[in-house]
Length: 88
Image (tube, rainbow, N blue to C red; front, side, top):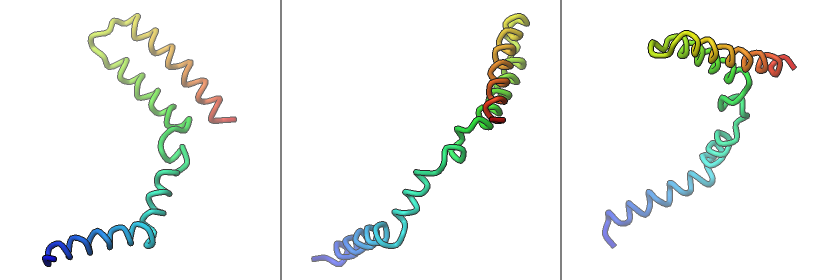
């Protein structure tokens, strides 16, 4: 066999050995199973997103005033629900 083929096989074997026995697999598993608040699905993150969306609604130059008011009121209700959720 050629020297390049042996080097390639050694690199592949070392990679899989490291993945299995050196803890790299455990690190990948831990990152995949982080709590939902770390991934950004908590009520606080949704609260922040709703506030940012209100800013986008109010900053839209194309939308008329009544439409902006209606959308902002709907977001206000969402924010109040998220506030209750985060306090409980």
